[in-house]
Length: 226
Image 1 (spheres, one colour):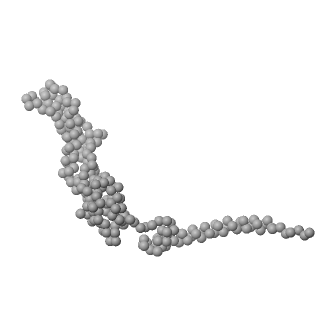
Image 2: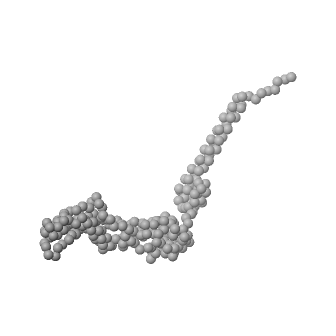
Image 3: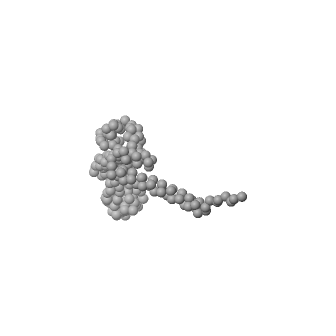
């Protein structure tokens, strides 16, 4: 009986080596195609170009934006309390008690305080109502009626606020509550000074500027406020 020819071991190992090479070659070609698509996307520039649509489909991304009225209202409301102005002031505030009969050096109690404080103002978009936003999607236009600006907080900086001087009469003891009363008065004066300097007007204007940039990012081209 004649012996059957056996397959050569060298041929088998050669076939095994060619298989990884084919896979690597296919991966290289696929990578090259993706690079070409990316280059054409950059060159074309326009978001509506065919290459951009192909690239978006390949990468699983879309350049379409939802500009519907409910979605826009929801996104603006999520901005919540948008702080747009911080008003700072340094001031000396006085307070004290007087006696209508005796002079201050006998019965008076006076305090001078050097205060540093800030007032924060902005717009609370949580108060935005659906009727305050009118959208024309096809024209990429939006008309808004924003909530009025308001003061969010008035506070003194304890690290920079200190008693400048204290004078207590010879016949009386110092009032332990006087410093707290002067601090409260300082906050009131700070609040009033910020209003007098137009903090609410500035806060409203800054809110409009911030919201304009935000809406442009959503795809709107015409933005108006009423």
